[in-house]
Length: 307
Image (cartoon, rainbow, N blue to C red; front, side, top):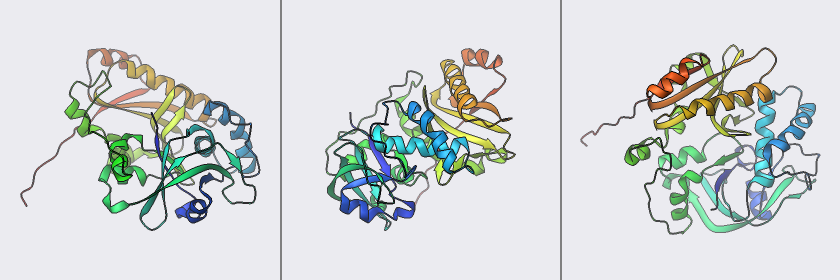
């Protein structure tokens, strides 16, 4: 099944018109390296090789910032598959839609030298016509954002036909209607982070416009990576819709281990946080033996106001 991405073509879409005319998407990290033949199937292998290269050229950057840059570069050059759909803002409030149509190539004379061929569709999507959840996802900070969650709406915008579905594949979610109401929990939390209790002590990690949301690890993407305001602690935040099972404790520990081994600077500690609608005796038992993981509940509510 094809995936859907929002891709920024330079800061504030500076190179959008150039890429539209050249029928490509592009990225500019590590510009002096032709990556032909250097793009492994696994992003972690790529990051292990090129994070040191990135840091050598940018010694002022952190390992997390280098990881975000290299992860975005790998996604553009290798992670996206032929047939995947990209939405690229043009800088005027509209998005050009296109289909990935070829493999990586290198254009050393261009500012954004790492490129993928794209067949642009005869479609421009006005941001004002998007639903609020899609606007939030396409407006997220960073070079690349996976917006496959909004497949149905994107297909309608691009002329595809899609039947609305309400399906939960998460066995810990018992009520599909509640799942639908809560599916944008992550976007909501990111947008309102500073107004939560977490925002008092932590900020979502961000460097050069790259935000550590859906940060790739070798066991899957962690939802949010935050850093304490004194820079001493990294916080792995895992969000679960509906009831959290005790399995999420192991998942969070795996992410924490990756962050400790691959991202933490000397002297930094790693903590975990699970956010879910409900807990049960199993997860309470598991958490009682993992004091470095906290648990928060969230509430979803709405009210009707007569117009």
